[in-house]
Image (tube, rainbow, N blue to C red):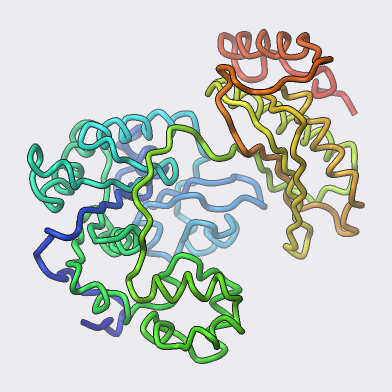
Length: 404
């Protein structure tokens, strides 16, 4: 019922899954596992997937690399220092996307109540699957077995009465395991955990709480709401208090469409040139538009994110008069958002373009009376050329090599 000196949790928290219909399926070191599957010679080696440049970060690492302290989000330079013998590979997102699709197909074959969270994780409500596939624990085992056999990858599964607890359970089931948290043992499981285990406790909130001596979920649960609201705001206080007591009423929501699409880049050297930044904005805008068109979606909102050398991040957004999937239009809005602020004196470390408030492009959306259809026709032709000859086959003239 408590955390051991090494921070590991007990592997058993009851065997009754009758009131624990929520599963959280999380692929183990997904990108790295795909690379090992593609190249079996990498099996057993420390493998790191991430940006190759000096400003790159780790996106995934095998457990052999993690044994050296390598973690996702860590700068590549730090990861290399910790594990000099690691095999460093650039990401191949199209490849990972194809494997993600296979995993999601397995999940949907078990229940229609699947909520993808990211490319490598999803929630399931298996309440209605009991008659065909058995209890939640049996379903969790079946899912892991089928993903291993049909896709070739390891997955971990958390099983609980709520989404938030199931997600925490899957993290403690790794690697390649399954962990049930019996409903009436939820608080026994939750309260010894560090506060960072809860959704909504990020770096800043964690610092605010730890300064006041709040280190565990149990301690957080017993802080008066009034005090908590003064520290982190009323909405966050109510949210975290509920989660700390194992209360989470959110149902598994089937989402067929992405909520947002974005393209970001961490530059090798801080960008101080407006021309260089605008070139990236144009490229990122066209990438977002291409992905919108591929999914048959339109975007109402364009967002630009900029991070300076001190890691201060700012974001600006604009809602359009009509939704779009045209790269030129997204780029125009994104550029105007960038021009609304002067570039940081030390340059731009990271920049990103995103689109959100997505809707289906199959009718029922407003259009502008003076809309020019030619840019979209040209970009559709660009899509076809890139699909046949590769991503660099056709691009806006201003992005051709040698252009300023």
